[in-house]
Image (cartoon, rainbow over all chains, first blue to last red; front, side, top):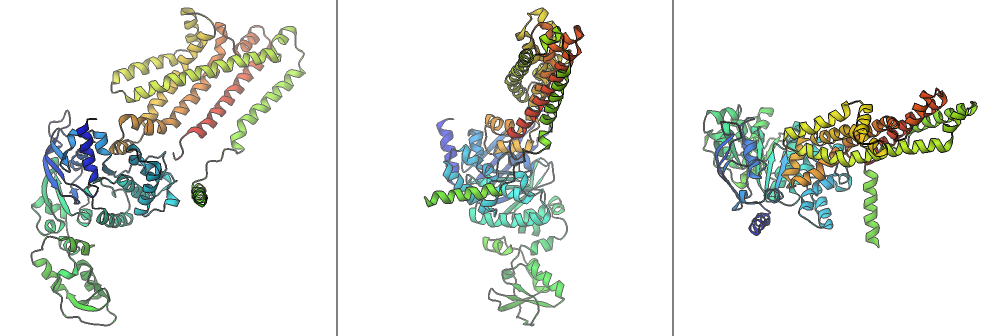
Length: 348
Length: 262
């Protein structure tokens, strides 16, 4: 490996809290195929951003993602991570600094959970005590007790637990960039929702730059800072925040992807604090909605109780106002502002 | 001091919570050796009741029998070891080669080795080359090559593509993927191939007698030619017992050597 390559990789690795990814007119043509699988794909992902690639199967979203860590080599175009040209780096060294999670997880069945997680640190030549410490730390991060799980084998774990190990393994060497290919796709709905919530909490504290591929639009809305809706040959139909895409789909293709219930999906993204509250009703015993909740929850309470208005309470449980169906509609009627960091946190 | 104790304690709990290893010492596992011992005891009892003539006495004595058993085991074990050393690396190379032609040619050669009747391989080699132990050894290697070669290839190719992709995705070099992931995961299949080869060799080694390479084939063929059935029966039963015991030992080794977790 040349010296410049080494410094390039070190530069990527030093920014452990997320770096910029730039794809510029990236093309992939498979040998023997006329039409490219990915055509002129350009995108800039900001440091610490979680970008969702959504599209039907076969649209090239996975191919696009896999070109970033060169599991698939691009035919032309350029890709850079943290300002370093990915194509000039040694692919094996590069991959050790990019977290990689796939749907089928791909844990090594003949290695214990601890050994699985230690894979990349071992490749990077970390000392044994440092690796052991990191393994325990990561198992706790993904809420698996190290004493119980470290020495187990993958087949002794449930699907959800295996996927947590998959995420822990990808995070092992603290890479600035993570590539995730439908990581929660093979789990049951309850486990999936739990994993998604944990993942969001985790991402809030680690702030990696993440490319996340999914075909589930609801998952994209729930997790993404921005969503890229892709059609054939990885063409970007719309690339925007979930709220903006829901409010203004760029074309029929995007609209069809959102499906029914766009208004309800939008409400789930808007915190109660963005609505203009009416006077508190103060009906004793009636259900209330917390100030930190979202408008969808508020509407849910209204529909369920049949009351004209629901009281909004603050953290101390004091009623600070009320919400009615009219007031909720008014928020959607008004132009939706782009989501800020604060409003995202509230939306969860 | 305290620290050490603590570490040990943690280690101990981990071991305790790890899954119980499969139990090795069960009655079921020891059925084969028990059967073999019983059969050999009955054989000894039967022979001791017989009035042996001078021809029979020349073969049915301890020194002659141990010599033949020794030759037989030597042929079997040395041939199998050679097969392991030659066929496993070839199988790995074949699994990794991109050229279908190379793969097909080598598989075809190995197939010919096995498809030709064992007697044919032994006699042909003796005619073309020489008689004796070395020739018998080469014939056995040719004959037992295919199961190990094919199992090694299949063992490596059957490794889950997702496991391979995640290994590559984490930055393992192709060699690291091979040595740390593919070969360990192929071990059970490779061992099964070796076990087949060992049992093949026990059987085929009886033919070594035709080219003056010794083994228990001597007893069987002499017994037949001279119409001394006790000699024939003792030779045949011993070969069968060796085959059963070797298969049993190989099965035991398989359980011990296969990676935990799969």
